[in-house]
Image 1 (cartoon, rainbow, N blue to C red):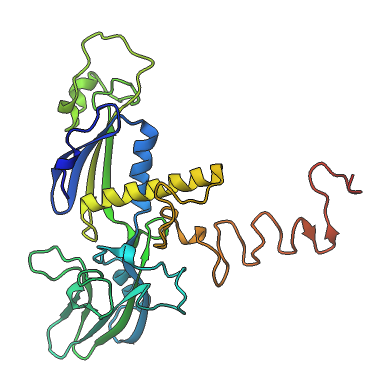
Image 2: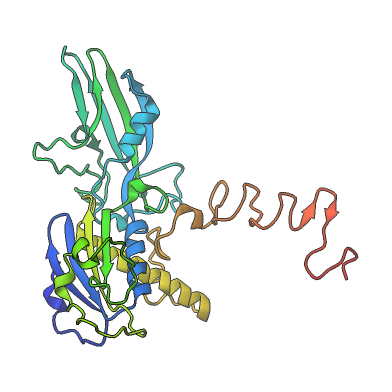
Amino acid sequence: MDYDAMEGLEDNGPRVTVREVSTNRVEFDLSNIDLAFANSLRRTILAEVPTIAIELVEVEANTSVLADEYIAHRLGLIPLNSKDCDTMLDSRECDCEGYCELCSITLTLHARCTGDDVMKIYARDLVVSEGRPNDSIGRPVITDSEGLGSVICKLRKGQELRMKCVAKKGIAKEHAKWAPTSAVGFEYDPHNKLRHLNYWYEEDAEAEWPKSKNAHLEDAPALNQPFDYTAVPSKFYFDLESIGNLEPDAVVVQGIKVLQQKLAKVIQELTGSDDGRNGAADGDGFGMGGRSPDAMAMQDGYGDQGYTTPYLNGGAQSAWGGAATPYGQTPGYGQDRWGQ
């Protein structure tokens, strides 16, 4: 990503300063914004950036000592390359029955131990099938020097493992396997000038509590400086570590995009506008911002909107409909039993 374009921005608007970037980590500062916005971005990055992860596992053969469910859980936690996953449809918005090439990626795992030594099955043994948006999406993320990846299971002589895995797009709000980051460090006011923290100490808090690594980026308060009751934080320090399915700077960009879409949805509901401006629905399955399946539009099954029951009654009603009981209608607020 080209960070030179960020130079020359006006100082009175939100400003991003990238301090360090690596293959799996990025450190940056946000300034000229308030605490609510900075924390919203942090929460969006943690829980609502879409990625790819194994969702379905079809077991054809498993003679190992591990149960099918145990291996399926381990497969789901293997990070998969999620570059350009926006080109995939969300499975709940796809017209297929179950899964297809438009909303999923298929991986196969077949291993059989024929020797006397213990055979280890690694993430590298997952084979990605054809029919995907690009050559890299869906591949297991392997970062170790030997190029093996995570250990899935171990086999002894004569044992076999044959599975078909289906990876789908999702967000960490639904399950942690879709999380794009292992951690997001978030800090402001490293000198505690705002006194939002109350340090516990025995003799001297300055000597007993180590300074943050961001403390050198701000001036320390002067000795006996009067406390400013109107001061608010305006500079925030982020330290984001990716698990490898997305580049760290791409995670930040996707988080901003999702946050824009959520704000656009709020503006649309308040104004009644359907023009979809400011990053509204883009038809990628998370069109109105990153949403969990409970907030998706009603499809087959329960049609969850986050508060419904299997009867699709809107959550605030009983299974008998409205405010009714099996013996008839009950009066609501402001009404007596005679409907007055």
